[in-house]
Amino acid sequence: MGTSVALPEELLLLAYDDESGRATGSTIGLDLAMAAAVLVELALAGRLAYNGGTMLVTNPAPTGEPIADEVLARVAADAPHTPASWVQRLRHGLRERVLGDLCARNIVCDVDETTMNGYVHLHRYPTIDTSVEAGIRERLTRALVGDETPDERTAALATLVAAARMEPTLGLPAEEAAAAHERLQQISDFAGFTGSVSMEDSSIRPSVALVVAVLVKAIQTALGTAKPTA
Image (tube, rainbow, N blue to C red):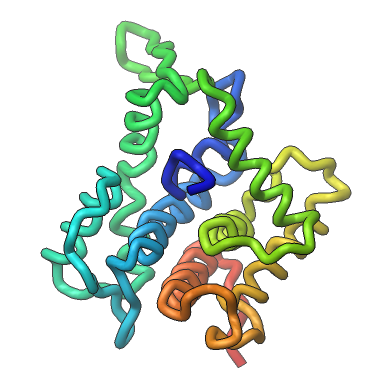
């Protein structure tokens, strides 16, 4: 694997400033993208599929990734729900869960700045191990500037970044942000997630492409950025 962390953690590391330990960009966008990323992670592992308008467990065997396995068990035990419903259900409390996991692995640390006798709880999460995020950014940079087709995981990450409008977290000059969004959108299109390329012609497994496509639509609908259907 090209990374030691799961997709939700990759998104969080991109969004949090290494030194200040604070999130940048849209809070709701990040939370929605992370919730979708857990489901994408399960699709990549062959555990989850989209069928008949709902998300369905195709293999209940644990993946070994704690957060993903908690969600897998939850989806398996619950009544069927739409992708949009699952994204909303999963986003609450997920960020704290992911931050806790990254702290436990010494990738970030929790700096407690709680003040006023404990009534105002303030926490920062500066980065300890910068190599993990550096690897994530390197993969995205190669996808943005290279001619090679990104692998499934990187294509999915690029697509979620674009869906949540997280381009500012890439640290690009303002004049390059719009071009970056277009390139990320191209990656999504060519992967069969959101564009005119059919899933059968995509390099991504159709089952994965379908899950990513419906989750992107769920994120965009929640953010009010979905394109109207013809």
